[in-house]
Amino acid sequence: MMMKIIDAHIHFGVSEGFDHVAQESRQVNSVEFLAKAFADNHVVQAIAMGTRRGDNSAVCSPQTPDLGGKLNPEHYNQPDFIRYCCGVDSSALPGCDLAQSLAEFEQLLRTPQCVGIKIYTGYNHLYPHDRIHYPFYELAQQYDVPVVLHTGDTAGTRGLVKYSHPLEIDELAMAFPQVRFVMAHYGNPWIVDATEVAIKNPNVFIDLSGLAAGDFSVDDFFENYRGYVEHLRTWMAYLSDYGKFMYGSDWPLVRVDTYIELIRRLTPEKYHPQIFYENAKRVFTRL
Ligand SMILES: [Zn+2]
Image (cartoon, rainbow, N blue to C red; front, side, top):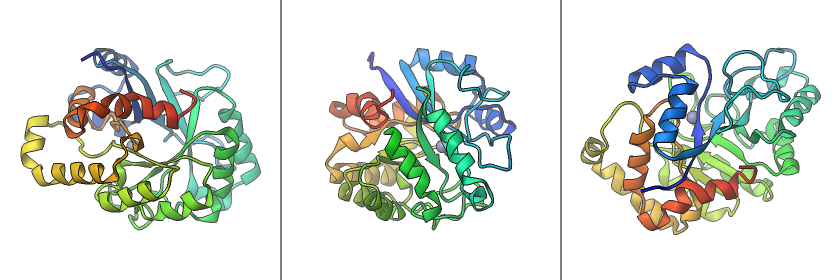
């Protein structure tokens, strides 16, 4: 099937951590490897979540994906198939120059490559609706870009999952009805709660990254996690709106072809054009 795909959630950057997770699924954390894997699987665009901390520690510089070297908005040093969300270093916000930080975010948001804002709830010990984040949501509204929030389980033990529980998105969605919010990873394993928050709030969407990780065969996955698969299908159907779901992989945590296959088999075929492409275009309007 020749279906154009947008991957709404990847990570892309020079780091030993990402090199290691790429190796664990027999991949290479490089732009060349990713470009070929995307071309082979008809992925035409991907959105990278910024994870690289800014160089200026006196301000909370936006976190960006990066190939190394300083991100220069005038000479964007990443391939054209990658757009990105600039990340908010929430835990550092109380000690930094907010006005300067917001100015740096605006500088990136004025460029077409920056298509959203990412908040690392759970990893940062602040609720998504903490008032400290409000200026960033106001920026998202002003520039008409969505805000992606980490929801659900955190990798490693240093996160606190009470902050990344999907129910915490409800208050935020109500406070900023003009802003589109994306619950990354479908709030996994709080699928039911995430479903309810997405049903209730017209401005809340879901990316399907992070439902599985590592090197696995899709056949084995469907065999070993039959109950989980049925649970996901049940609550996606209950939501009754496939316009809410976007394909995302969390690459390099999974192989490109494997994860596409997983989501394809998990979801009804007639909604694939929406899930794999059209919904991302509607939510990330800059794509
Ligand atoms: Zn991620």
